[in-house]
Amino acid sequence: MTEINLKHEPKPNNPNLLRCQFEMKKLCDEILSQRPKDSPYTFFEIEPKINPNTVSNILKESDINDLLLKDGDTLSITDTNDYFPDINLFVGDTPIKAVSLRAWGWKLEKNNWMRQLDIGLHYSDDIQTATQLISIHTSSNRSGELPFITRSIHAAEYAETGYEGHSAVGRQVSNENEAIQFIRLAEVLFDSRKNDI
Image (cartoon, rainbow, N blue to C red; front, side):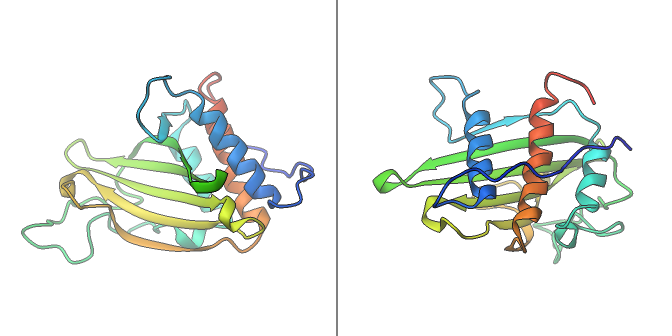
């Protein structure tokens, strides 16, 4: 497996934001700057040039591994039925065909802001597809507070108006290091557009 350096950098001199909040906003803004000038969207997504299994392994070895589905876990909705059928995709058995990185940015009232970073693992058996999406969230309204991190599953078979994924879990990160690990991985994915890893 390719090793990726996730070590710390010095904390920026900012009296309001935690270092992880500062660095997350900085990275999100850098990614969002790649949007076309006339883009109506509040996000920008790229497909990094990196082996998706490398990304999966790094996430499994990180401090957020408790949120990830384990080998053998289904990517189907928990209570399958005629409307939401079993898509027969399983972590560890179904190939991860791609990885994605998406940054979100919202401007709120009184110069406040919200940012979100998503790393997606895209599974497919060439018939069905599903994404395990890991997202970290922060905002200026939560200055000085640790970010919130979530995991959800999104299956193409279930896509319809009102469907926003399933099997979602989340929690506040335990410490800044946990958030920085995720942000550093996102930086590597962003930079990999230029250099294959």
